[in-house]
Amino acid sequence: MRKISKIFILLFIFILVLNCIAPFVSASNDNTSIESIYNNLPESQLGLANILNILLIVVGVLLILLGIAILIRLKN
Image (cartoon, rainbow, N blue to C red; front, side, top):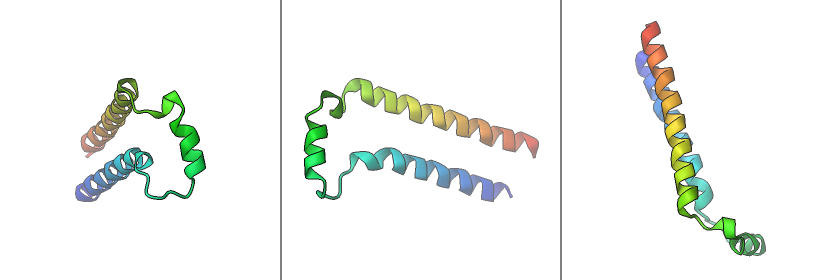
């Protein structure tokens, strides 16, 4: 049972990381007009504040997952 919960937590972290990275990777050029509008906005560039916000969110989610893993471990 512990092995399954560890695999589940690792899979959840992997999916979470992919979802955080996926919006920054543009694979298709179908919406070039929409992309050009968003690229002209000042908020579209990934500045230091945005990177720090993303890192804080990721650290927060990892702390929540760590807390859940500790609770699961204490119950067993």
